[in-house]
Length: 306
Image 1: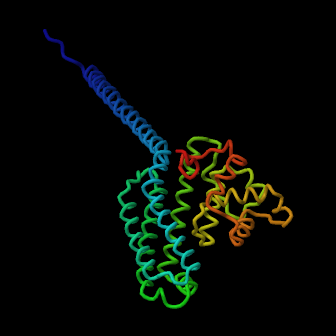
Image 2: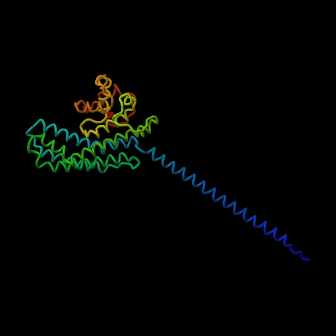
Image 3: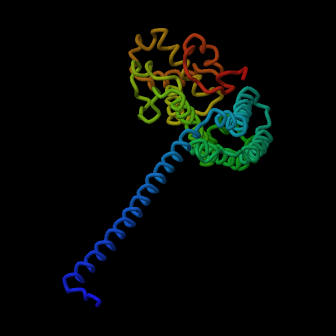
């Protein structure tokens, strides 16, 4: 005869089944949470690795060298043409300044076309900004020179140069070119920081830095400060920021800064630029004397044999 389950037995059986369902549910819920957390850690690690990879790939030396040849060099070739033209105007009253300005405008447009096709990797935004600013500068020079060409032969050369100095196109062209130069030199500092962890690319300094502090800075940092100084002074010439750096260091080494009671890098820089004491090539002339152990990217204006 079949035995019936009592109410107590039935309750115990139902309770057991309920506990079993809860246990299985808890197990699978735990698996789900664990999996999600593991995936989250993996994805976080992947993002970190990606960020590190981007950081590692930013401001590589080959990018600095490529920028030099494809963007910087065409721009500097134009600036050299412009500097030569100004010198000719001042030394030869019969020079055809109108034709010269038209040729300079044509050259600026040609350099623009050459530099705009250069590819700059997006992991190096300072180089991208420098390219854009150099291109803007060339376009502004071209537009300004074309506008002044028709009246360029009226009056002496100094009148034309003064008119250009106050021209909106010309002044904006200077600002853009100097901004680009500053970005390029900051890119060199950031490259150096990836090579030598003791080089700090983040701390901010200005051109009022005292001379004792200046002399402790790595060369790439000093060069950035002179680039910033030239931008502040709106000084775009045939010499480069590192030429001014070398001339400042030579001036300090000579004892003249102390005798003249000049306290800051900016004060020395102002004296040297105002007295026309800086020349293209000063850095190379003084390189072995001052910078034998300094870290620099292998760029032609630092290493002409490269």
